[in-house]
Length: 295
Image (cartoon, rainbow, N blue to C red):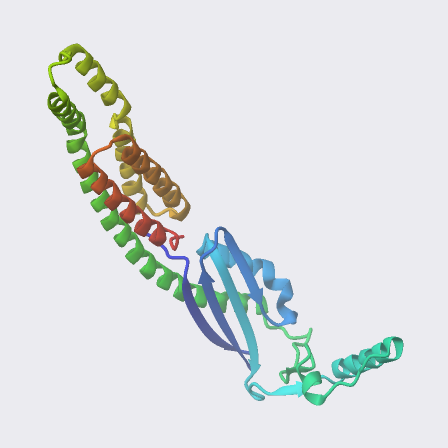
């Protein structure tokens, strides 16, 4: 099974007169980075919730939002007078100490952090509800939804990568077929050029011609590159059908395949072969873009 690193999931549960909402978003990231935002009263449960997320997703930046809303008060906000007064006192102290304008307007004060807070009452220590279990349950529902979305997208990405790989394998077969013709074409063109230059002032030395062709054949040999490319194709094909996280490994294999294709293009100076090399590089670039989204 292949998973994308992008997805979204949400859930909501009612408990002890509160509606608890869970929202999970994920985007591409090199590692597994989990960021949780929830009411301060639940900060003690953060480590357990983080482990729950990591059990479901192994790679990506995952943002988890947990909000609490009192069913009786809805989403009402109230003024935190203590916070507002502390901001006003600080502004006055700055005015007295530095002679700067310390006047704050109502709009400015209301926009400051913690001045407006949720009207929902904080949880009491005597509340017997096992909130950790509640949070684990609600987050688990949201994670199931985002994992399903990531799986659906990942299946599409892996299918597209397999199609690209099939195109690369077809081009590889053409390279294998054309490789022996590179030397033959060079021998034919070299002999034809020497014949055209023949004006009777020199004799055509077949031995020297053979040595020159042999040197060219050694320089332009792409047998090793073709063999390594075939091996990379096998590894890539096996990886795409495996159940393990494959994004990083696939990116590495694509880099290796691209290196071999570039070497083939630089060593084999042949028109038809060069056309296949250009096509393979285009397919590898498209494949790399898709692999960048896989977990």
